[in-house]
Length: 309
Length: 289
Image 1 (cartoon, helix red, strand yellow):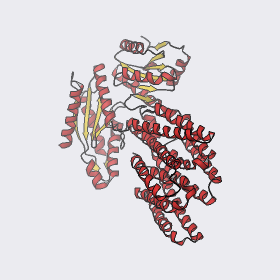
Image 2: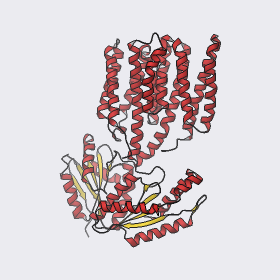
Image 3: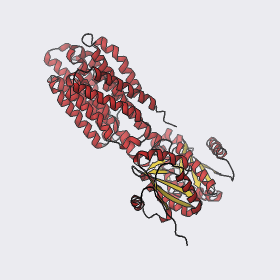
């Protein structure tokens, strides 16, 4: 939805670095205790995590998260059986780690599937009912935070009227606002015109020049519309390369004037990668007495023919 | 709708959590544990009943403080029995939250960790601190982009999915636009301020949203005030529409209607509304010339 800021990536790298330190510390601990056979695994994992830290500093990847998860599980499986008194305490770490790194559903599934495995690995001393209950409650409670995280994220998406890539309203809002303008035109006996815009080069731009070229095309269109249309004209993104410009209380000739102004403005500016912004247009205005469903169908059909032309 | 979010599953999870904690509270041997677990179970149960998919409860911060305080109390007061709850802290930090709330949660997490010193041996204590810090970093890194996005969206997003109900900043943006548009189109636009008790605000908002036309909007100005932008052909039609709408409400409300050319500032209109007697209707009409 949005790019995370630079320092959030730094936090991630910091977590990786802490994990490296922890693993190195554990190998050192085993060395000091003279348990030489147990040094190899944490030391090797520490080297791996160090590499992951360096990778994360440049560009955070999903793989480093998985690596962290695997390290956590390996470490827990090898170190925990010896620590009988602290089983109940340390078993919480893999539970939380799984939830932090994986999405909610796989995390809960893995936590539940791991439960019998933990019982097997931590053979004695951890089969009391008390710990089972604690483990299950911890899984349940940590899952709650995953739900709330999802709720907030989806709520933000469901209530945001803007498109995620450019300064236009998204499809759902566009259709709502258009229905509103339709009703307003009827209520106040006014005209309504919709300008259909299709950007044929949008996909080609992203294939040849990357996502940034695509974004600059979108940005150019939106800025041209903002500066050459009235405040209450609505620019909405109908689908990937099609836009609808809703012009309330505008006659057909008025809409053609708007189109001419837009064409002039877009002709003057050139993008560094793709040159001038090409676009195909078609005008669609509301005929008197036309019902809403008919008007909407007409708009959809014309958009389709425009993008296939 | 793009959202495939299931509130029902979240609610089921809340209830399951409440049941598990309530059981633990019932079998707990110490009175403090039983109290804390019982309170947490009650919190979960209440949350399950009021949970809904809108921005309504965002404003109600103290409610979100309860789990933090309970968690800190549980870990510090009975680290020997419930020490594993220390690992729930990173999961609280994963939620997008205010800066001060984040600072408070981090502080409480550090405090709880400090208190496990008595229960853990020193090397375990140091190790758990390092791991807790690492997990917290991951959690904050994951919450940050969502929080950043929310900050922008909250200024322009509708307050509940599907309802034409908007926050105050949106009204401030819409007012000059609607005003110039009404002037250009030669129609009558008016702002209707409606005040009610805070308890009935949301049911009133839902009623208003269902009464207005598709092109009109409802705005939430504060905890007890809603605004409504009505667009009609002329003052007479506006008057009829407003009267019909308000008569159908069935909730005692204080109303102030202002034709847009008359409106000098929103703050002034709000002040005038505050000074008005309860359950009155005042209309500031355009002067007839």
